[in-house]
Image (tube, rainbow, N blue to C red; front, side):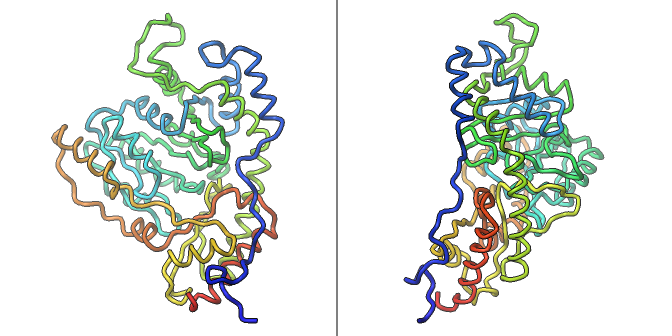
Length: 406
């Protein structure tokens, strides 16, 4: 019988589902019931679960302080205000990331300046960062994309030489480590997200970590309507708003933390195994891994596609064929600077503050990653067994073998 691709009517490699997400059990239920019966539902009613989670999360990420917010985008916004970002300041961000990295700047009155990423990691290129610095530059936001730590040593070196604040966007990098230290507080401060897809998940939620007490106090004040810890209820010393996390979110997050390290080890083992097999046995090219990366967060398993290895078939047809074989996959981002909301918002800000119009961003690696190269597998696939990883490899091999029929 002639073998056919599933997208052309053949039998798929895999029909069983991969592990479901989110994962929960009686721990989440008990934690929520505890909040329900306590009567302490918000942080203004008492420290409760929020304070417990902040302490546990800071410890888990090698940080002195953690400040929660209601989501990861709010964490970025609060952190930018805590470091004193003002109207017309420039903040350098990678062009390959989720929109919140840039929109948090725009909503703070700052102009995001886009730089390219490294071809082997899709993380910010430190050389491009240094080339983009101007007298208006106040901060840099390196993103640990997909949970793979950026070259934070080189980024910190550039930032310190130019007097820039470093805000790590670790929203996808829970548990990721660089030279044995968890990311987030390696820079001046760092932000995490607990949105539905994230490796620690409460539906929504965010956190800022730092080793600096002054920044921790600023974040607390900004996220709590500009109050000061020892002040009166209606004493507002700083321009802030209500970015507070609820006790419900914190309860779920505390329960999620109880299984996080075990899941992180499973993702790490499966990610390394899958990368090795795909590299050795298929034409896909998983991202490189700097030897200073001591743990990958694996919110995403990212690999690169080259049509030459698949009979010239473009990425879109490959993704449809692989999905039909029972392996969920996607193409990922578009370059941030091509989004009308971001492009137009930055242009309006530049006009308002009299900043010169820049040359169009030159980010060939980002454009190649977005248009033809990048392929994503979500983190829950890595929570399966070695046999599940073998199925992913078998499906890629089948599509590669029969790509000429597409």
